[in-house]
Each structure stands twice: as structure tokens, then as C-alpha cells.
Length: 208
Image 1: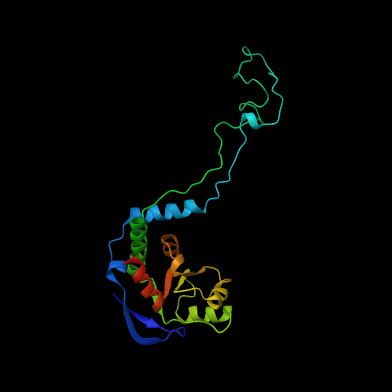
Image 2: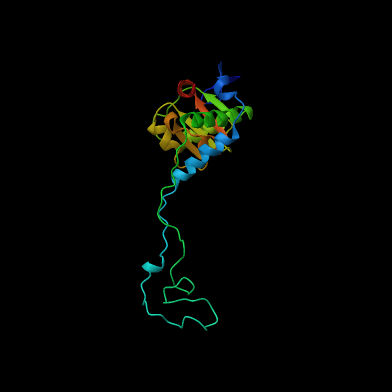
């Protein structure tokens, strides 16, 4: 699959690049995508949730009612879970939600996500660019020139570029990532992916 290469002014440079079929043209595997996104979301969780159990409630341990004949459940002291203000039964405890996912599955998931974007013509390739200084106005102008201003964007750079990152930081719906930060969740979350030529080469090196 061939796509045109544009510059940041939105002009067609007259050059084309070929999207690697083994990355952008595979049959997407939805289950691999599900697993990779699930792992990404799980890793975002702090896992610091905690509720107090019966033994952790501050209160008297005196038995406040007779064992039988009260017409309700046996409740013991005032820390009983059946009373308002008592402990919680089987409440949440701090835990780590991380789970292992094989590298081949993660690679397949990223290829599948990129293939979906290619099928939907949601990939734009631009010349490698930078800004002389951080200016949101320059970045907005570039998105308007490329006719993706009203889209949710993922801009993928081959390496960190402070000026580009700062220029896009305050724009809603724009995410600037380096190749090392490219993952299935971010690809699927974007409406359009803007790739530089060197980013495209790096993707070929990483995912093949």
C-alpha cells in the first residue's frame, strides 16, 4: 500500500512511501488487541483501594445483644458487618493488577491496530519536521494544512523533540509519542495517526 508524503504546509512532496504489508496489511487479530489493551489499562491502576474489615474498626468488642431471640442476624459487637459503621466483608485490598503478556502477542496486537488504521485510510505520512521554538500556533497550523485539525491525533516521532511536544501539549485531542511509547491502546484511541518518514522506518525495524 502506497501513501503520499506531505510537508507540514500540507503540500504533496511528489514522493510516495510503501506501507509494509507485514505490519499495515495483516488480518487484524481482535483477541490479541483485547489482551494488549487490557494489560495497558491494568498497568495504569494504582491498586491502592482499601476498606476496613471487622478487626480494623475502632469500637468496643462488647456483645451488644443476646445470641438468639432478637429477630435478626447474630451480630456480636458493634463492629459487625451487619451494622451501619461496621467492618466490610471481603472488601478490596491493595494489589498489583499487572499480568504477563508474551512479546509476540503484543507485537501482533500493535500490527493489528496499525492494520485497522491503514484499512480506514487513517494514516498520514509527513516529512521529518521540527519547530524553531515551542509554538502552539505552528502546530495548529500544521494540522489545518494536513486537514486533520478536527481529528483526534496521534503524532509519532522517531525520537523526543521538545519543541514539537510543547507545541502540542495544550491542544485537546492531540498526543505526541516517540516510537518507544507507541502502543496498541494509543493507536486505537486516535482518529488519525501522523507518521514522519523516519518514524515509519523505525516501526519497520521494531515490528518486523
